[in-house]
Length: 553
View 1 (cartoon, rainbow, N blue to C red):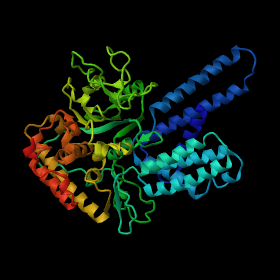
View 2: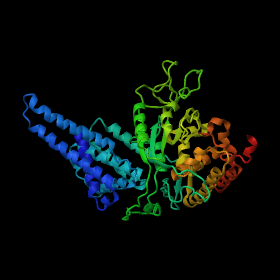
View 3: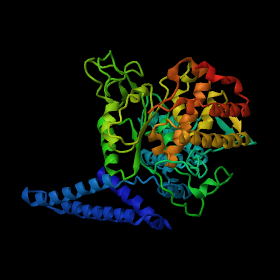
View 4: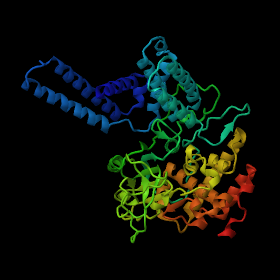
């Protein structure tokens, strides 16, 4: 199996290296990585083939040769693990898209359905599933919809022709991807009622610009761990909708696509996308504690100077059972990590012995060692407040953005389609429309509201940088475009929920942060509240918000 995976990796690398113009897009250091990998792969093939030529009797003559072969394969495996393509450059995805598109255009699998070999049909179905993942990551939703229709037809034909055990699994794959692409709660429509494909990557005008005189840090977001472990949330492959949305929020819009997005009949551009650096990202779906900690340690070790590590946790809450005499970093619970044990009562995890802490849980204290470097944490969980009890032990910039621990009953039925908090961080206007009771909107009004939202973000940036009492950690992170946009969206989310009538029933319906933001200068600022009411007026939903919110505190 390992040799099969290596063969596929070699084939993909050769496709990338041999594609027209692709070599110019790959930095020298990465070309060397590919060359070294291919050398080790060729060496391993030679030694493996040599093993087959040895006599099949005796013991000593093959031992040294076997040892050399095993050593090379071990080096090759370690090399592959250490040098995975994790640059977050969309050029690699574009190469994969071109490769899969060529297979489709040339009808590479056209003869498969004429043969009575189910294994070949499964290979074709897997091709469709992988192609769909690539298109999702590139936000090519129009292509995704075409592929889903083709996949549906292929699965129907497969189940009709062959009585195999995996029929249910393939139908589940189809259901998953259909639910995934329909997860957005609001549709943006053209005049002819076709759906507009919106992009939530960072565009050139996305993050508020730093005005002259704003004093902020020079830290840059370098690495991000995106972790998903929510029960019953829409997913496709090993990507939940929350993970997908956060992934999009940490990607730049390719410059040559930004101006062409949503144009009818848009074909793949012949121009090379300008290289714009994105943070490295690890996507971890339902990791065990060991896996999560291993990736954390690797990211921490490789983090460059003056850089930030972001940890995004979208996971089921783990609550402490019983009352503790102490209030340490392991006494408030945390979020769930994967285990083989069943979850009891859905969201609440109960321990067999109340005198011990839950071991399948990422506690706030587990993250303390990593606060030796700048750390930006986002927790979307029913027990997010556990991370409110942080202590900054090493004086490095540290911020935690925490979701509400509960939502009003009117919104709870939508939890399978992703968290509202993460939606605000990914697409704040869509989240605002959703909480206002709107499910569709014309493109013209959408673009008008987006322009107004950019104005709100600019004003939020000024509120933050002009604040006299804000913790300096927020300003240290504010120099990075991605983190600046996340912070302004967080404040917009918090201010919106505090003004919304149905959210004001309980304080646990509000987002919180560590360190705490000065409320009167940010989330409860009268100037920001006025902006939110004006946005509601544009949408004709002002009635769902409170007019005089400050009088209620």
